[in-house]
Image (cartoon, rainbow, N blue to C red):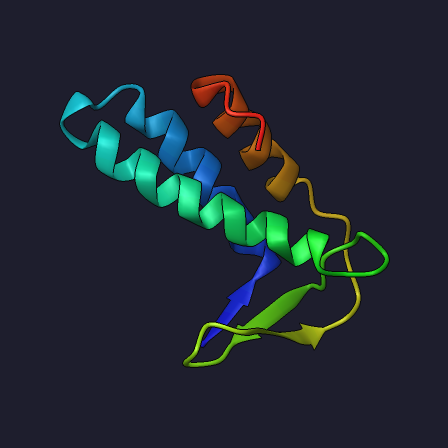
Length: 91
């Protein structure tokens, strides 16, 4: 399975939507928290501090670099900001 950097907008999208749909709030916030952690790890695990454009996940869950370049997409930091804004969790 492959995960592209472009999908790092999803945690922010889920968190924003969860604020307006009480029936799915907890479920969407839990999913957003897990996804944003993965996006953060894509940056944190690189020596340069820049995430690869995409990674592959092995069946065991290990991340493998798919393309080492980075197009400086803002989606990950935007999602991290939204999660902090809604949860005040500094992680």
